[in-house]
Length: 195
Ligand SMILES: O=C(O)CCC(=O)C(=O)O
Ligand SMILES: [Fe+2]
Image (cartoon, rainbow, N blue to C red; front, side, top):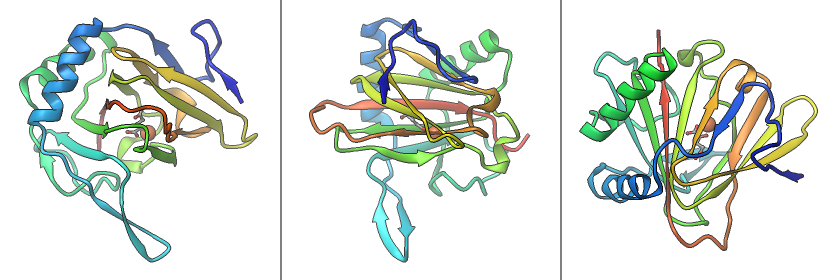
């Protein structure tokens, strides 16, 4: 397994942009979101046993979004002003419109997300996903579904990871536990559902 540095090439469909907002802005947005969002810890069924997911999450979406999207909790929240403003800026910058946002809060290094691709059919083929990181730096791992080769990347406070093209059809990704990390991180993934 190799550790990514900024000059290293990421697989096709992944682009890392180091600092899309200042560290202080990213930290204050982190704190604000921990306080105002209606955090959920849904249960998932793994081999017949119920488990709480190892993080907190909040699903924000426009009213017309198709709620059958499988990866979100049943509670759908409306957009708080700072996230609405961020969506507007990203839409202008990238030329995509986003109608949904999955927010994950990893309270410390014990929280994590397992291997998956964001390839639900509601996201369409080759979805364009913008992922913003706030708070503690965490390791993000990308795995080629065919060769199983993995690549690590640190997602830092105030950074942006774009996932597009073949990123979901040819790769999986995960946010592994990092037991030594004792502060929190919030990740925002802007998505387009059901269009
Ligand atoms: O926390 C992250 O950076 C990954 C989040 C993710 O993969 C997802 O929300 O689908
Ligand atoms: Fe994902």
